[in-house]
Image (cartoon, rainbow, N blue to C red; front, side, top):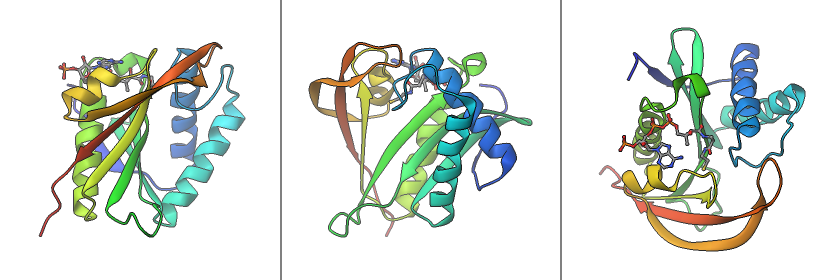
Length: 175
Ligand SMILES: CC(C)(COP(=O)(O)OP(=O)(O)OC[C@H]1O[C@@H](n2cnc3c(N)ncnc32)[C@H](O)[C@@H]1OP(=O)(O)O)[C@@H](O)C(=O)NCCC(=O)NCCS
């Protein structure tokens, strides 16, 4: 893996712009991350402005993987769970820039997100991924367990329905 620095992102025009680029690129290339292609740069930046504002309120952590000045990947740890699920967190919006795929960036982001969840006292992680064009193999390699598959759950970015696979992983909390 290149020399990648992973850190949590706070609201800034630079972070929003680079996160927006990654999101537009991922959607254009078929990534199932809640949006349809074509995703406008303005809509992508608006999404990240909201996400980073939520991070500022402590409701989530947006991690960024930096290769020098270039943001090459991101993952979000959603912490804002209902009152009866204070031990749970959710993984979302895992994306690596096309130029940096296949080099372990997403794996490193996932390990960092899990470590952060443990630090925050969370003991259960959940996530979902599309059956077509998703990243089930990556998550299974990291120890996530498939709970089941829901058929025809969402539209793929370029149209046509795909199922979703729901995963969970119990993680060790400190102390
Ligand atoms: C999925 C994605 C984040 C992977 O990023 P990446 O940085 O290339 O992944 P890594 O290089 O860290 O791969 C880690 C491991 O997962 C495997 N892997 C990566 N992408 C995979 C995929 N789509 N399906 C199955 N396995 C995958 C790799 O082979 C590697 O395995 P290894 O550790 O045994 O060598 C990237 O392809 C992407 O941004 N896709 C578009 C957005 C998306 O679909 N995100 C997931 C939403 S749930």
